[in-house]
Image (cartoon, rainbow, N blue to C red):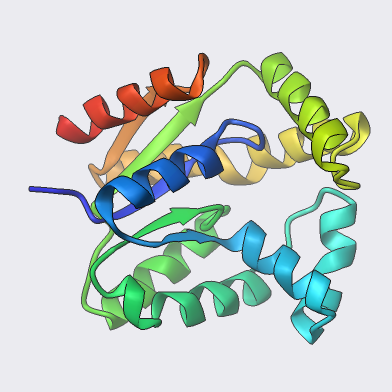
Length: 190
């Protein structure tokens, strides 16, 4: 059976966005990246974007009600009916429970949670390089370290959450993009 409803979980800079893009092309399903959707809302100057911007600039998580609303609207779009790759949502146990309720309403379930693991100092170095290349104001060392701490406290518990549900598959995220993509493909065959 091909997995078509999955979540990529990992700290900032772990490569989950890049790997989600690769998987989305390979599986022919959309990548649903809440970070991208929130940044687009900020760029558009929408009410959600203005609400989210302050949190994002400080490296804090955007409040659950905002993120859940954005994610639910996206999961109800026609292209997500045949499957999806969640990237950046859920980020907390409360969001995971909200996702479970959403998926139940849609009469589908999450088939797999891929958790990418990368050394924290490597993550900081990756994000600082990305900040220079992309000019992202939300990627300076202090904000990056705050984001890492927030990830450990708020999102890392999702590894146990999805392990208890029997859908967790852990993947080493160090190495080049192709190596990590190969490890993900292997994990999906298990």
